[in-house]
Image (cartoon, rainbow, N blue to C red; front, side, top):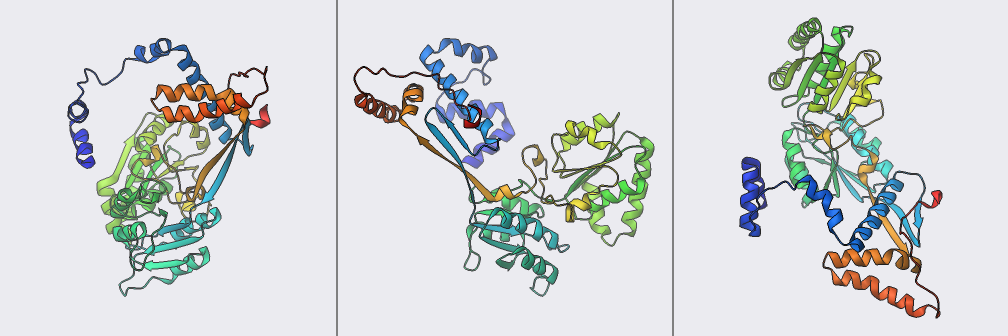
Length: 421
């Protein structure tokens, strides 16, 4: 049912939203968008008690999440201590492609950060060779990275095996690693059963931004670098020089004609090869943000000054001497990067993708006195009486235990990090 609803909204847009609200909720909606004035005027319309409770909650939520970005270990205020606990997942499944080439570097990129994060068990799936075995370079990387289990299986079936388990392959908690469109789609479909890091790590992509002074050979070879991974990827040349565009295209054609991977290059460039002429470097950054590529290369001096204009890219390589190939192998950051425009909301694979963040809350009686009224008000507003009662019972117990004559303390309820108080 959910898939049919999603498809209906995708095809019919607003019409589907109105019809589904009528069919499923029994409500006729005159307009979908709530007027901005109604939103802001609501603060004046609600009861004062509720408004104050919302303000207390808003302040405390904002203060705590700002504290999450600091180095102070615990968040303490008004009788509440919040501890930030980090726990690695127990078991990770890595996928390394192997159909068109072998990728021992991907084994390292997936398994090493998992080990750094403290993961106890690391499994690897890799497509077998024609004889059913896995090549030595891949196995050597697995040994070096501390992989516990290697399975000779590739494709979407490998992702399914790691997500759900089989007689041989035990299920994992997180699946990582790039692959073709079938592998990427399999990861999309098992997400939720397992964690899937680095969003849609599918066929390779690059946007090469070339200035008039960019060496033509550098730009052409870097377009070929990503295109040689095979079909379904992207290779964009963006420049504000028509002469540069013409020269790079000619140099790229020569590389394709001489390449041992000519078929893969031609397949990628036929479906995903583009040249884009813009008015200047700032406009080139606008194009890059729309494409949101896996790799973004700024092949000119002083490229760092444009970093503040870049919002969506898996990784950025600045200057003519910074090819993406350095990042693919030895620069240090991960080469498992978001593709298919998922860089709009996701990032390169990192150790934190293998860790979970928990928090513990320890409250003293003072917390019930200062923050309890706001919590009760919000619970009553949401129609959850047991939530309100869990606070009220404790406040009543505190009142009963207080010596006669001691009044109830009130406070504004604003939380501050312990280090800043």
